[in-house]
Structure formats: C-alpha cells, structure tokens
Length: 302
View 1: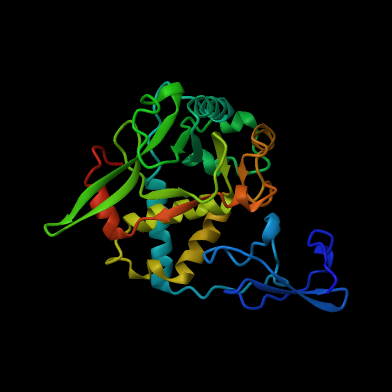
View 2 (view 1 turned 30 degrees about the vertical axis):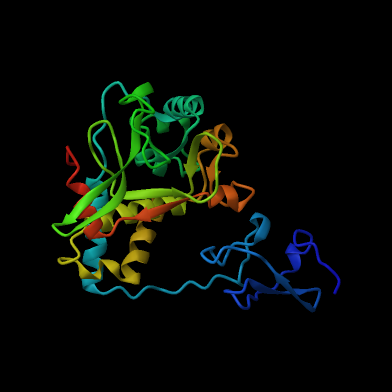
C-alpha cells in the first residue's frame, strides 16, 4: 500500500474515524480509502491527530439548545457565583503585560511552570483589547504546577498573586482519610479546581486557551454550587448554556500584544504547533464532596 504523508494529504482528508479504541482512522485520499493506525493514549481526545494535527469529522452541526425554566435558573446561579468568585484586588500588585512579564521572569529563574488564571486569563482573549486596557486587570494570578511547592516564591513576590500547590492527607470522616492536592494563595484562599501536567513544558508562564479558561470557570462554580438546590447544574444543557454565555466575553482571538510576547507559550490549538503544547495542562475538577473537605483548610473565604 502506497504511503501517504499525513501533512501533504490534509486537504484531501474525508470525514471518517473507525475503531476509536484501537486508534484506527480511515481517510478518503484522492478517491481511495486509506487506513492509518496511530499509537495513542486511551484517554486522548478523539479530535486530535498525531503530530499535533486536528481531525475534523465533517461540517459542524449546530443544534439549538432546549433549555427548561429550572435549567435557566441553574445557569444564572452559576454565572452569579462566577462573578462572586472574583478575588479582591490587592494593593501594590503588578497589572497587565507588565505583570505577565514579571511572572514569566520569576518562573524561569525558579525553573517552574506557571499557568495564568483569574480575570486576566479571560481578558487576554479578545483580539481588539489593547495593552492599556489589560492594565485595568490589576491582579495577575498564576498557578504553579506541582504537588508541594510551598516556599518556591515569597508571598506576592514581584507583585504577583501566586497560587501554590499543597498536598496533604485530610480527614473525610472518622473512618476515612484521603490525599488531596489544592492550590492556595498568600491570603489563604483556595481555588476550587486543580490542574495537571499531561506533557512536560519548559519553565515559564503559559497562557491557557479560551476553552480551557471557560472550563476553569465552570469547574470552580460547580464545585461550590449547592447541587441540592440546583440539581439541574449537572445537565448537558446547563453546561452548554453556561459556556455559550462565557463565550460572549472570552473570545477565540488573543490580544495582539499577548500573542506576540508569549509566542510558543499559548495553550491553544489556534496558536500552538503541537498537541504537546496546547494539550499540555488539563483541569482537575473537584466534586462538591471533595471541595467540602478541602475548603476546611481555607483560612480566608471569598
């Protein structure tokens, strides 16, 4: 069978994907059916191809969501809670591109990997936003990857709101103790979601993609939301409704100054060349029960 170079045949790929668990992909190339076998992880997303290419399974079909009254209430509560979770701005903190550069410099010096989170991670995803407008977001929030990184940076060093990972065995009940990892800042506030590195990254600061940012907001609100009062929060329609509302603020294009300054450090398939970059870090959601256990460690509420 004649071999077809995947990159040269991208324009000829047809919509087909067989045997997803076996990694078998069927493409229509110049009218002939070709089958390629890719070795990949079982948990790898099916819309990703080898060598960092993305496979599109035909035209995207948009279907109008049928959202019920109780589901609309759940979406509104998630959006309200998301606004309530914005951390108070602190005096003497760096802002905008200046803060991002400072955070990147410190991370490279300490040989650590950091991910931008918080309000600025949303604000950078707007292609019309200027460097001056980004300075209005006075807090630069950065999560450092790891399990236990206490002491790697000083409290608010460089004017950055650092979120450091801590891992401890916590008491779930009188008969059960489990190991948890969470991220805490210098004021003792704990984030209601975690992160995990799937592929090794070079030290420094990275900008997460828009879908990652939206998932971050959804994860932190779901962990804190009362599922007794809002059982519909776990519905697919509620999740999609929340994401659609977020997409009105978090666009798909990066602010030009950020795209230029952090080229090669943007965790988005629209800006990164390989999946080892844009899929390098994933969000770890906290269930409501896990959050109840972890939040007992919080010394200051938000």
